[in-house]
View 1 (cartoon, rainbow, N blue to C red):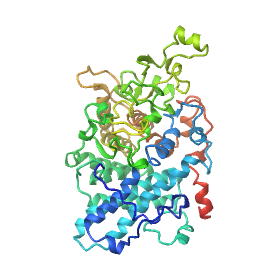
View 2 (view 1 turned 60 degrees about the vertical axis):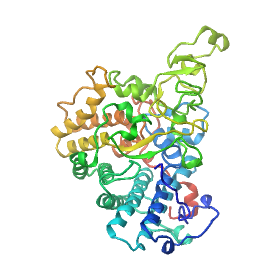
View 3 (view 1 turned 135 degrees about the vertical axis):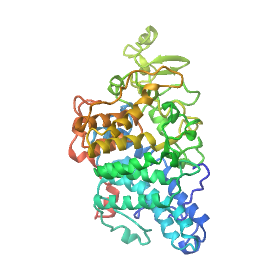
View 4 (view 1 turned 120 degrees about the vertical axis):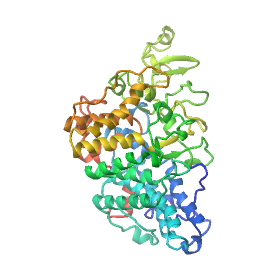
Length: 516
């Protein structure tokens, strides 16, 4: 995404008449006059991907919602915004400020994609060449709707640009089942016309579309199709250029991840804040330890999001992924400190209530290991930590293996294929870093089938994909809420009901359109 030019002039209606996103027009472009070449089509398509890098999408508001509603992240700073606490405690209502800004950004992605798809119809060029570019827009539209439908259920489905505000403000919701049908159609078009490989993983390929199709089918509970699609990606891994990264840590090292074969589709940041909301990466500071300087000057975190302590203590210490996923130490004023370190005599003299550990430096910290996937090898930083050089893997090959395994077990319980695919992922977790001695755990999967295998593979997804915005979707699709948020869960007992599997459509959108 580093070379993308972001196009915003074409986005006439960023959302369904969303008044708080109105912009002063600097010029008017008509699709019939602008879309005169494939190059201009590509610029229009890039607009959709530009919106994906906005802070309101996955690296701040939307991403924070997905993290907090899972059982793998809780609030660290008790004085943080109430809108965040409400998602963590499932007390969010339709006036939640975090939801209010995350809803329109996904429709902005869709609006940009729809403009490109409509504009492609006017280009007089070879159909295959046009389709290879416009397929990127179909992919972007499908991805945005895939997030929307899993979060909100029945939603407005727009398949073409909105040109009449009044009509846009009266559109009715589309049933979730029909939204999924359209998502499948878009990803299928993308799979058909996208090339097998791209110059960068931030541009979708046919393999990325196929991988997302497998994920969509899994979410829908269509296990035969999820199995078939995921297995097709696995069978074509050499064609697509996919494989597991030998060292799990490299997937979260901004200097190395772009050379890895494992990422399938990524959001690519360049450590720059000059584009404001379109280049800032808030996952790093939000998950960092406040006042921690272990990764260099100016890289302190904000201590807003922290894994529950039980997520760390119940994780097999021989599993290499635990060491990669957590920070158990910090550096404060030049001194290294562990999260569970007792307070010093001097700290007790200064504050008799000092708990030691991370809390001794700043009360907003918790004495719990923090998420390290984003903070440890972030690359370039700036703007009070609001930037990184991460290329975030929104889909990677390990997830395809686990999709295939889960679906295969549903189709043929106890399938050897299913065991082999999980074992492939676990083998890397045992091997550890390059040059280290492999451990005995996590052990190969053997003898499991049916429900026992399903439980295991969902736990494997929880560990392998920890903090990568996947866990809440797994809880929702498998209806694990009452189990995950029970007294024996990672966060302890929470008030959770069936209604909490969906988020309320923002009040401001309901006021604008009574059909919502």
